[in-house]
Image (cartoon, rainbow, N blue to C red; front, side, top):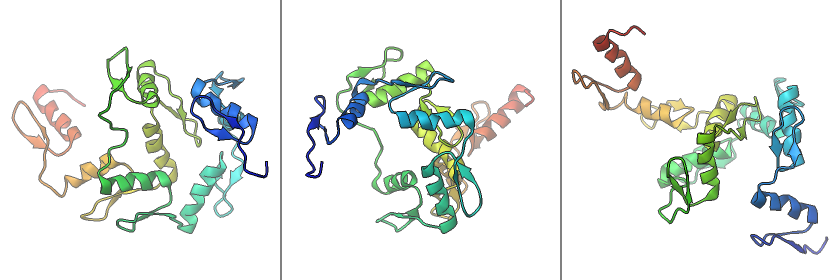
Length: 239
């Protein structure tokens, strides 16, 4: 349609579409229907292109090749991100401090350091309650993610290597191993890290903080693994 008219409207959320097939695909986000099934492992998907992408994890097909170094990728989006390592392009710039990023995910995480925002935290009513542990959730999306932890289901799959995770945050952390990006920077010495937990641990080398204390002798350590090693002296355990 050339006039921009969108006659096909979702009766659940009101979103409108120009083409009927787009509406039909959208409705699956409400119903959870996954009609496209992998004939090798039985995994199901909402959309045919998702199934097509998944099939590459069985075939090891990597049709997208970097013309600079020859590295190949399963997905065009992965190649696009990789090419920024050659070009140095960092299109996502922080307006607060000017630091730039090649990946939007790491940019958003960095911005939270300035705003103090804690994602997905809400004090409103939480109508979705986990029957196994009683934890409540406001949003059905995060409730389903939590239930996956109990059920062992891991629906979040790495498009690079096929590894699966129960939580999207864990998948994002894993993706750093493919991109090589180190978005967490120590403000005191400039050293960079792939994970926020590694940065927090490193920060203790600049401070005198020793939060891990031996309950038997009172000796304190900056790192949990150091305390665990010390405890073996009391127990006689050999690593």
